[in-house]
Amino acid sequence: MSQRNAARNITEGVIWKQLLSFFFPILLGTFFQQMYNTVDTIIVGRFVGTQALAAVGSTGALISLLNGFFIGLGSGATVLVSQFFGASDHSGVKKALHTGIGLSLILGLLISFVGLCFGPQILQLMKTPADCLDGAVIYARIFFSGAVASMIYNMGAGILRAMGDSKRPMIFLVITCFANIFLDIFCVVVLNMGIAGAAVATVLSQIISAVLVVWVLLKLPEDYALRLQQIQIDPILLKRILSVGVPAGLQFVTFDLANLLIQSGINSFGSATIAAFTAYAKADMLTWMLSGAFGVAITTFVGQNYGAQKYDRIHKSVRICLGMGVVLIGICSGVIIFFRHFILGIFSADQEVIQLGAWLMLWVVPFNVIFVPVEIFAGAMRGTGYSTVPTAITCVCVCIFRVLWLFTVVSRFHTLEMLMLCYPISWILADLAFVFTYRRGKWLRKPSA
Image 1 (cartoon, rainbow, N blue to C red):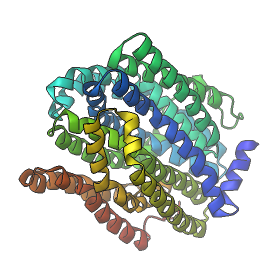
Image 2: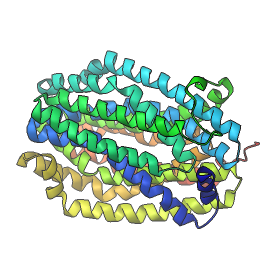
Image 3: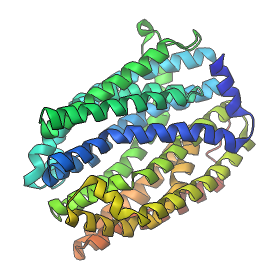
């Protein structure tokens, strides 16, 4: 009964209140999920050293690239669940849930295989400096060994959010984040396991989160409950999931591939710059979490209202979400800039790293608000199942543009200023393309079309 009430709250009532009721639990959940790697970064940087911090930081883009694609691929299931749930199609919800969990098991195994077999070679192609390559390989291999647990959690949490429950996934991440902090301190500081200890702590924490989310799915009302013996891939639903999930996964990949290329460029400036960029990226994480939370919230909101065929409500929600996103992220960016030295000092005691990280911030953080429309427009379009065009936009405006920028401008003017400028310029190009696509209106097709 509580699940049905959640659905009614999303398809009826005051839009900004309903969006915020989703946004804040998603934001807090995302915050604690990001804390996994952030805690690793802080403890490694403080108790192991700058080279170890650079080693963990140099794996960030690779981990995000592989996880992003497969999580995006699995998001097709959560979009389908939200549409079925908004349309009160109980049978569709249950089939999509079991197909999604089955898919997450397969995707988790694929991530582990790719990460364990090809992670070291990719890190070398990324020009990871020799003095931190061994540590980066150790961290990546242990991290990817826990990919199945990570995929099960993300799929299960996405399904719960699609059915109107954004609070319990957030609570689970709070629990596992504190577990990760304890395990990090125990493995790195007490057992003196170094980089390997940080990775082991993260994997164990992900296993805890997966167990918790599966437990809740098993306890859902019978109409929607997970039954382990019923986990199977429905071919028809799989086709629909992939039609949304493959473009969504590729869209995640375009951002992460672009960041991978940026990381390669950063790596060419040496270990101190890698450590500074890692600290900057972690310090600026809140703005990305805000953008991402708005993107997830609008996807679920649009998905359920699309299933209920409330199209005017969808347009209003996009406008309201844009307004809230611009205001909140603008304020957050200002606070980060003002306290940048203090924030960076949390991640490293090395003054060279802090000063360089603060300087890098000035080239990107003031422009973070430009990225808001990209997340919200793309999220709204994914909610209706329209994924191909948003993927094409991000591929061209973000990934291809940054590749060209790196091999032309940065190649000729090999400076950090030129490298960092590709962020705001690529966001502006993507904004313009998304506004044009949104105004054309083809993304909001009726379900029968």
